[in-house]
Length: 334
Image 1 (cartoon, rainbow, N blue to C red):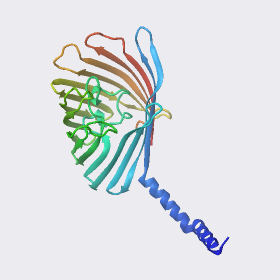
Image 2: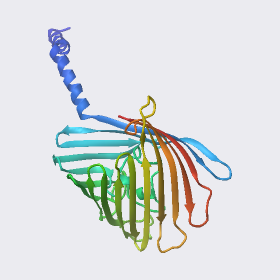
Image 3: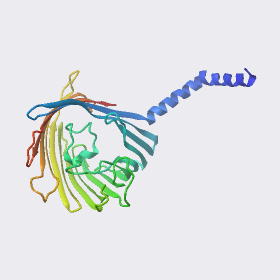
């Protein structure tokens, strides 16, 4: 080995094995831990459809893995992946710029700021299945995640979000020059009560080139009431796709009985009623769902829970035996 190589090896060894280098490695690890936070959850379930003959199966309802953190005091990021079956899909990929504590700019792909339930994780909602107010392709379409930019601000008694988006959805480029405008404003009193409203409008381009573009809009009103261990929430939404008017609403309530046992920290009975009308000018096309159930919380903050519920699905006409019984186990971290 030449003298130059021996010198380089000696210098490298001194760097690695000196206390200063060990301290620097610890600082690097701490910086990574401070700037990267991992989170995720898994929901596995048994689901049965109660027809003349019980049809039931086991499945993975949702599986998410995300990472986020702060690069500096005013620059943050978030990435969220979901695993639908054997594939991987990008849900969130956004950057937050917060020059002041009470306001910021978010750019990238993320949840559009419309509605209340839709803006909350499926790991914390009251029942395993979302309501029509979170969007349903056949009954009440609402854009879930989209690519765009959003300004947001928060104060002691209010939160406001206003954004502009492509209007195409996740991982898709725009197909016209029009953009979706979305806004949400809500007023809050501590953690006890909040009321708010949302509005969105834009233009849709059909997949069929023989059809022309059409304008759409959606509006919504929301409220929550959470004194003591009560949970009550309600939303009412309406809108139009070109000349077709549609509406949906729900109300839900739950009460948590806290326990101090080794394996169970809370029991939450809950009930919800929801209804949707995909065309208010057409008779006999609405649908309603009455859901009742109980949530067993093994760990606080939804980190481990078992949700048991029964969904009574009521069609206005042409009734179908499609009521559902669901048992869903969730584990969430951190």
